[in-house]
Image 1 (cartoon, rainbow, N blue to C red):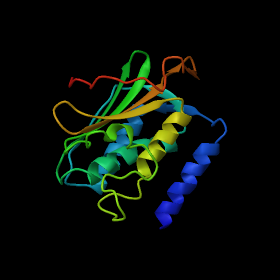
Image 2: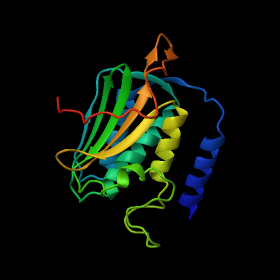
Image 3: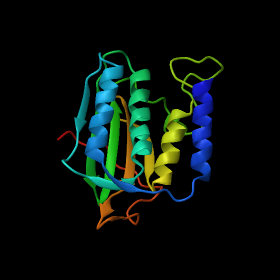
Image 4: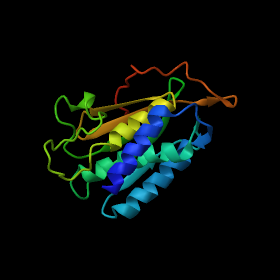
Length: 192
């Protein structure tokens, strides 16, 4: 109950948040830290992090860390034990992309548009199931939107779910939001 209340309070504060105080955040460092945290929480998992040496965005580092933590936690909860998780950071068309991909059963048909809704859960009904209250991905969306970004979910062509976060990159000490729209969608990344 305490976690539910904390999540609801966070969502309410994100809904009413004025412009944030943003600082440069290196997405590689962020991805590496979240990868280490995920390995510690789920030692049976292989967590592969792929990122350039430096890709900077302006943001709140704790909130962006929570985005990746929620996405990797979601992958751990909704995939069989031992399924690998991939966290990829890259630049594409002048934007920063963060991708979290699992190798589980993937998203149910039609779920791509609903997974970010508040209280939506794959299990449905009143049973708690393996997941939480259905707020983790809603929090992800709220934080990403507050950072002038976008987030989407889809099934990877060869199986598993893939979540993509798009953020404006930092250029000349400022954030360039001109390349990110709420309707951008990207094709799945290709292994490099």
